[in-house]
Length: 334
Image 1 (cartoon, rainbow, N blue to C red):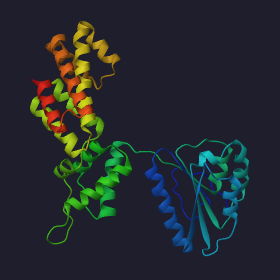
Image 2 (cartoon, rainbow, N blue to C red):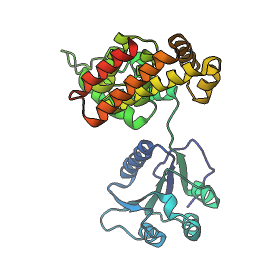
Image 3 (cartoon, helix red, strand yellow):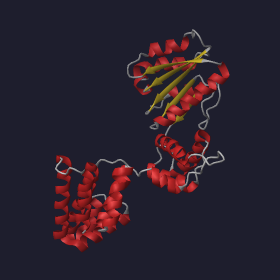
Image 4 (cartoon, helix red, strand yellow):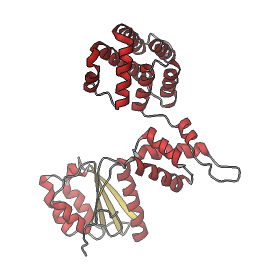
């Protein structure tokens, strides 16, 4: 088989005999795998796809499958998940020998969240490709979401909506893909049959913020002693983001604990806030200032109320979890 120079940006194609898909993004690994199968089907017609689990398979069995002829199709795809568990020191030489002379009738796809570099990489690059599958940056995720919405759902996602979506969901492409399907269905079609654009308001209505954002929003409202804001954020966390009332109660207790510790620290509050890893800087300053205004006695009362509310949530003393949270929010901000 003719060998080619390595190309880091190259994607898997029908000429690849070995493909390595490695990195933490399982969604991207699955997407590249599906795209490769489609390309091979265009080139060979029907293909056989066989799956092996790296942790429970033998190297000899996987490589024998690559070398054997398919019964129905002219080409086969042999996929190995958790490939790093299969290609270890004792079996690596087997794969190196295979990579030096791979079967023309098979494409070996090695998928893994981790990959250990070595001599095998150079042999694979001569007959295939290694693709790193990791989450993109925020700007790339926004662009991806806009294109994905148009390609998969025939929808129009505005840039402002895409930015809010990434802000709330993060750069996990699997989660973005799932939310896009929900948003496209919610937007629907216009009377003339065109897709209704997905705008920022629709994203705000249908996509809850992440657990971390929910907790920070609640804590910020409590720190500012804003009852209306705290109540709104509590309802958003439970009803829209589907957070457990117990977790929301913990967020309230956590901010009360921090405020009391900072209030007791006095002039050393800023250093303590840094030691407590309160970030970003504006949240740190806000908590330090509020703790100074409230003082140890008031923040202790807040902490005691938060602990009592948390106990009520976990013990079932509060029959209505939402009402228990609302009372706690009012107590903490009054």
